[in-house]
Image (cartoon, rainbow, N blue to C red; front, side, top):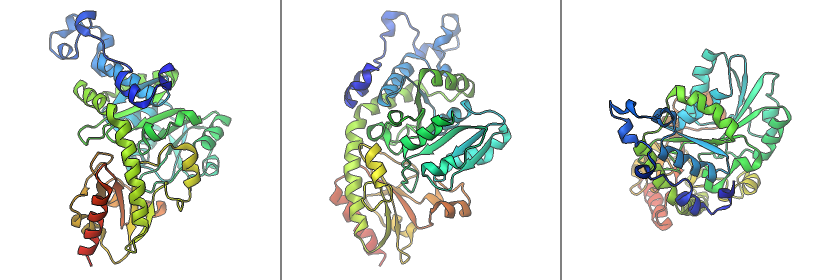
Length: 383
């Protein structure tokens, strides 16, 4: 794709510009929504089929950003995850999933896949060898997430892709935490890239959306399921997401810089037991992250030492607010055990290393000194 050679800001601003529907005879989405639109509507422009003009324009931008041939946008990240997975799995198939995984994805697999007759295994780690050890004759899909939510583990994209291709297995990745700014998994051999576009693609904490990018062949397969599941995105939200992509490059790079500074700061505080951030040289997967990421991202997690209560600490923060989501321009925190991973049992969370005192920190674009001051005043207030 020639557009893949363009700069990020150029892609977000110019690729897939919408057609002038007034002059080209296309029917506007607003007209199609009326009760009498069926008289003139082209079924190919039916909004639930993901292909009104502004949907198509946005899909072209997402594909270009992820160095893919094609893409689809969805009404939520979980709509994207579930549709992509089920497009490549059927009764009797087996899927391997990374041990450290977003709680919503874990719950989808754990509660729903047995109803479809789909077998699944979770790895015992996130090394390439951990995935290969789980491969069976009926394994069709390997699903990974890197950096992972919430512990920021790093999976070697190229190594996993090599193993999968050797066995004829399709690879899918949740690339939400990295964003296309920091990581392009297709360049390392991964087949299908998934995003909760609610996060860095949206960036302003005001939309819910998802995205999937891959080859035209793979996306056609995903589309045939997607049109039946009905997870399409409203045209208004498409407009908001397209707006947000134009600033994603500068937003994410600023968050990268702030998160790295905050990770070093937190790592030096006696009140902090442990910091999880792939940009720290002390992170066990730091070298892999350097190989496959252009920036280390705006997400980190940390554990307070046992003398501090995680809930009280979050309430004591004044600038940094508690939030269920992440990746907005404002800094937010949450306790994974109470939110993103609450659907997991305590036993499973313990297996994954998600402690009750763990705090996930989505670093925004504020002044770093202000963020540091807020952390310090909150810790001081609890002493």
